[in-house]
Length: 537
Image 1 (cartoon, rainbow, N blue to C red):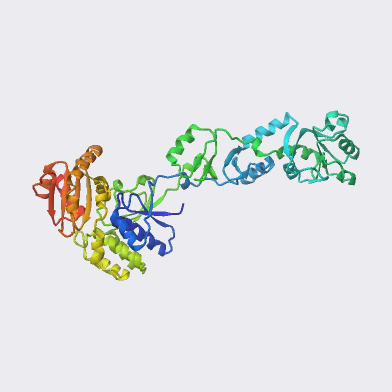
Image 2: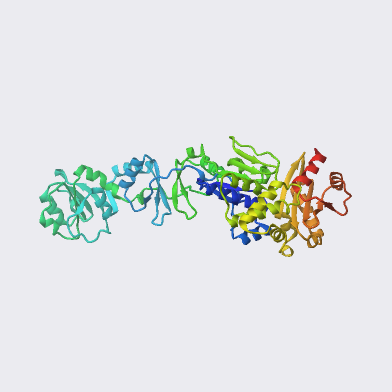
């Protein structure tokens, strides 16, 4: 997890989306390849039109910044296939100094979990029983470091039987020389011949010189030569069984990379295991998780652009590490755990600030990026008619237009030509650029739609009012406002649901039927919120 996310606010407008893209592009151009533009809301028509015009895809949508399992430094132990021997599993756990490890199917998915306790329990069971069933010959050769002496029928086959060590006092034991036996012996030619004549199932020759006649014996008996002594061979033969016979496969608790640690903690507190498998989106095992991994989780890293208010930011921001803030709004309630870089300037667009940063670092944006950034400045300054617009906004936009070889006037007209409005519901239009504010115990919601011809939106007044009434009740707002800003009229139609006195006193007007036209009012930030703040403050 090395990425640093760059995001604008909820219900993002063009300035917010483009600022994230432009700043991530700048940092990556400077060699910081970790920056990734993201968004925390849908793309409105205006923004999508500009992205299409200049050939960009929208940033990736993220839902929150809560810490996930994928953000943790969980263990990545060696993973073993279900077909491996107990011997290999134990040696791997010993060498890696781990007490639990995942066992995988052939496709990389989880088969089971093997623990040191499982191995110890299995070892104790072998003390009280000598029989082995369906032991793969291939596994047996592996643990014994052995070789086949004769032309045994199949390496892929298995053998079963009781294990015997050929001591002098066992020479006359009939069971030792039966088909259902696995006989371990040393340099005992006479016994070996008798065992072969009797057709024992498996004959293990320890540190023995091989006689030619044994190599030519019946393929019905599996004869293995090993450099190990009889004592060690007798112990390790039980380690040839596959781990599938021992590992736990039932009621395994596993986690996915996308699981949130808040949820993981609850499950860990209720369970008794030391380690838990971690799976990716394809159910492949990628590691193991223990309780101590939750003590110091790595937090996601984020840069906030075009906002610095928690209510307007991504969910779970309190679990993230804020790296920087670049904004042109008032400073609000964002808190950080350590000092960070904050660039806050009284200009009309965040992209104006970022354009200046390109200049300061000696980086020229591509013509496509420059055109997109110019569109964002035009959008947020309402073609330079907003009271928030400054000389710096105009200068930066003109510079970008020269790089992109576009006309700011033509781009502005294209930008504010509202298309597809008739196909959208009142709520969809309302939420295109919608923000929530908390002012002196008053909760308000303010939406803004900017266009060059407001007549078709004004005709849908009743739809907007009805939708806003429902929103006010659902969200328990004190007042809900919709600004329909007309660029050509250089003013805004204000629709509202709430107290008439609030609108009347704040803007010194006489509203009629939840509507008033405010000439010269183009900015929510500079002309709506400050007036309400002055009224309630």
